[in-house]
Image 1: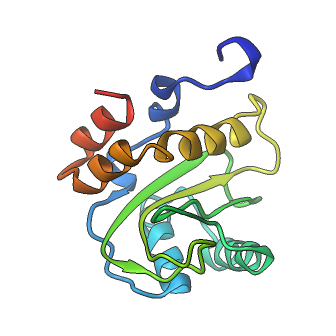
Image 2: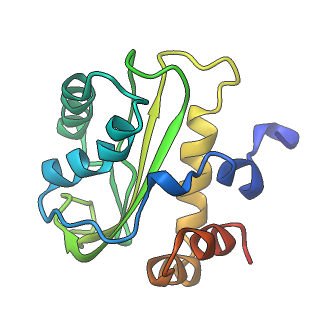
Image 3: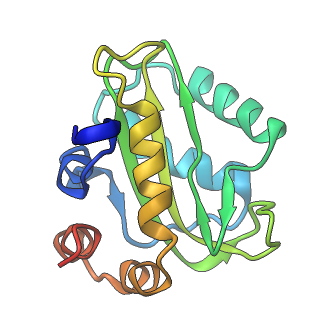
Length: 159
């Protein structure tokens, strides 16, 4: 962490995993895309009770869409079913109506799951750094065009 508790891009991308990168999401509905995003976490054995996670994420969406506008959504929650922070990145070619405040379809997803308390207290800084990074239209457009995980990470880090 730098001064004032800000997170650096390199620190954030250390949470990105190639196995949790979905280049071409198939789902076109909000709940279906959330289910698709947790798929790699279930397949890898990182979450044992996907129904509980889905219920928590769906409930979070009823409080207000995690679609932040500008074609980006950051579905997130704290859950007892994981012991560390996980980030799943998804890109949709078709776009998904995620009830974002700007009414635009979402093409770029960052799913964040965290345990009820994480010792390093990184959940909110991670969320903040993702939002800060994707606010930049040039970065956002480049991320959406990234053909693979390596290129995505390079762009996110500012390369």
